[in-house]
Amino acid sequence: MFEQLLKEAEEEGLEVISWSLQGKTKGLYCDGVIALNKSVPSTAEKTCILAEELGHHYTSYGNILDQKTTSNRKQEVKAKRWAVRYLVPFSSIVRAFEAGCKNCSEAADYIGVTEEFLRYAFKAYNNIYGKYKEFGRYVVYLDPPGVYKST
Image (tube, rainbow, N blue to C red; front, side, top):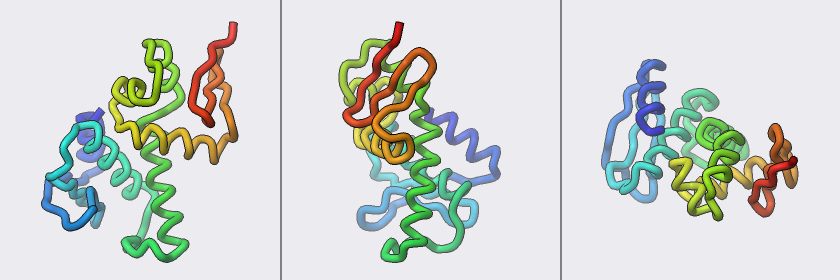
């Protein structure tokens, strides 16, 4: 998935660089450049960060580093929701269930994201759809997370 995101960034004319970022900052997007903190240890975490920064490319404008303003927080949510839809579509949740994943940790590994990001995805979907979402012959429960296959 990380390679797919790198390709998409390249197709968009974006440069992705590895950089030593200060503090807790794991990624930044500015003027066609995505900087990923070189201290991020796992590919799954890099994937989640890159997807969110691509989300900023598609959904954000201006300097939104100051998260005290409502407008900037809303842009942060939009970018993260873009990343959720890209990395954790309902089809991926169902495939993880079909593959025998029994919990969020196993499902996150299967999908290729961090467990923290997968839990955020369920919360984001819960805010959009409510407690569950029907997806084909499946019901994807969002709070608490789970999948039920109807007959």
